[in-house]
Length: 421
Image (cartoon, rainbow, N blue to C red; front, side, top):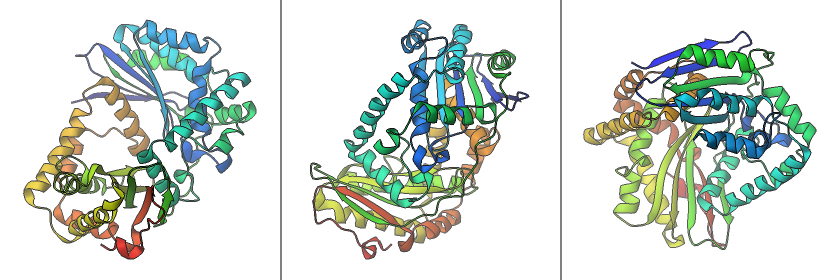
């Protein structure tokens, strides 16, 4: 039984901890319930930019002093921005908790946002944007999302664009920070050798005097666009393909069946796509499927990187697997293997304090409560063949499929008839 406790400060800031007495480390996380989907079109990339900027200096520490303070306690300091939230975290030995929390709180509460740092970090993020262009498997996924959810903030890149990046003045950065970096949007999670009361007291001292602020507003869900998109990048050797369709949101009751389906399709080395496309035919080195879930939407994609001459054969094989999953029950041994894989990977993914700390945050952000391993295992075990077939018929419809292709040839095209399944 996991020892999870939750409290909320008077200003709305929530604190969730899990005590793990058998370890010597603590992982701390400050989570902002704001990501790139909360930006206007002109603000695109601003959440990610602020995540970078807090490391450039605070009222108490320079950028170098932040790095030295973390290194001095052997801490692993990290941050990332997603579509729906932002995370700042540190992992340290339990004896260094006070110093570690002080670093995190200082970053989130007292950044300086100096003009000279904004100008310099704009160049760094510009290089990050260019880097995506040089990684074709990342680029084709970015292209897919932009086309699939076009006109919606979930379809825009987390990093923003060069145009929006050039518009990030100090005033714009400060206005966004002051709007969202407030207790109504903040969540603190911790896992490891800790005492919940001590964590709560530290959070109260650091953030208790802040006014609550307003919670980030939620816009309407995105509308899927089953597109066919091709982009030529002549320096490439491979064709990079994404075929996708609609999936369920993060907290949808169908999510367990969706993940079992995805595991059978392309979620591991024994999956149908890996075995049929890579192992049996040698058409691809990298081929897999993934489910991407958000608060109110989701999509499933299949990715493959193949020689241009093998593209159409690969597409046909992917569509054959779509058809099988909506028309044929999965053999019992394969069905059980997929369930066991899901349960095992979930359990193994929670062996570290960092993964436990992150799971506490994600459970609260998406479910509003802690979801136990027993509940997850029971839900996976309860998935039936009829559910898989029903979901397969819902999502693997020719008219619902979208495809994005990135490759070196001028004559690449996919038609709607070629996506028939």
